[in-house]
Image (cartoon, rainbow, N blue to C red; front, side, top):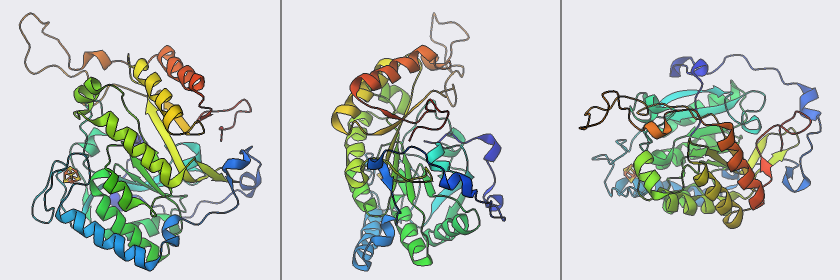
Length: 366
Ligand code: SF4
């Protein structure tokens, strides 16, 4: 999940800029050293290439899923028109907290004008350290229909001049997202769709998204099931993430850019290094290199900070424990350079080489 900067955390009503930012022709023409295998001459979003028959099938599948929701590994099996499942979100609308051009993403995603970010409220995970817990856990926000969402995508494109529509924490509202993309395609949307996910997706859900999403931005959070159970409140996270990331890669492949250095298609994998869990990061990197692609574009993130439930005082103090005992004390600190270095070295040793970091020329490695 994207960590939203407080400085751009704007109310929905005030978020799209009214003036179009100027484009620098110098930057657009500059040679960025993109390997030819990952360089695109031009790009048409996948949803614009979908036939009207396939689009109609996707609409009908989206409605069917809402009537018997097994769209994420929670597999609630509820009719969301009548009741809600674990995610607490119904069928007619999606709850949205923030819509705004966002400059807190990777350089190839945020580009020059920002990424058109849509932060969905609610989540199907319950990460105790969630860096966006006020959005993900508290369900604050506005209820928007798929058509209203599509209107916002168009505003982001025409007034915000953004490089993409970036759907953040959308796993539990995939049918609404599918309907919104199909509505926006008929309105003339022509920027790539980014699906920004924790990877706690189901294969059914990813099949529904096939042909509509251009860039998958999955997290691979933790490796051990004991860790996912304790910190994400999900027993089966790792197996689900493996299956999901492989399915995403099969759809869109390695990350590719146009000559301006903006990502247009492919998978950008994120791993947030956690305090004391560098061994899990190492195992994740090895698995990615051996089972997805050695050309996978990877962002090893070091910005972990204690948040949400981490470091809060325990409600019940057990006998013999100190009065100031804190929850999840083992991750109640920033990550150390050495821990980040361990994961980075393991990634290189496994054969990965495309990292989201500055290169020797001070430019971002593409
Ligand atoms: S998307 Fe929501 S209702 Fe559907 S299976 Fe997941 S948690 Fe349950």
